[in-house]
Length: 267
Image (cartoon, rainbow, N blue to C red; front, top):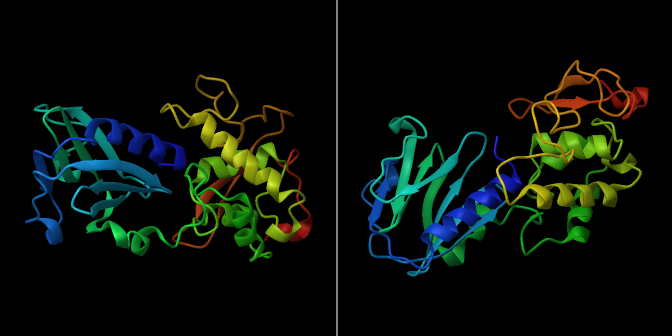
């Protein structure tokens, strides 16, 4: 599942390959855009906003896509057929004389006036990796719902954009916060937000994601994906439970000793 740092890196690589060049390939494979031809238009910039990718063109339009759980963009040299996934998963191809960008399973694909980008990303909270990052605003949004479990609140992109399920689990472990603690009872909410930003900044320039600072299977993460394994801090077995309301449930991992909970915090 793409997280904020993965989307940031995706946009950075697309920007490097596409910006400043005219499009020579324009192939949309969704019904409402099937006849659209962007060839001849120059890409000005590519940027990330939460899990959204915005490709801005010189005609004041923007190609918007959302990666959600399974979307991705893949770069190949011009003339080389992308084989990252089966062809039937391709939703769009955009390229120039040097590079071809292929969007697999990208969602909410649309082309809109750049001036109207707020229609697709305006609901998002401050982006942890964006120029709009505003810690005070993120805290204000989180604190506006004091009874919501912190695990759910961190995943709500309307509060702050960029935290996915893996980072949620790791942030809460590092800060010793039980995932079902209500936002209003988190002892140091600013510290949790700063940890979130630190982790995403630490991982945004490379595809590997490590929150421990270590590499290798079973060493990159403190608790995420480690159900039943010993906590790297205290050796207590890591627990896992679904959190959230269907269909937004996610597997949450935590250490019951490092992240103790009051009885009222767990249903």
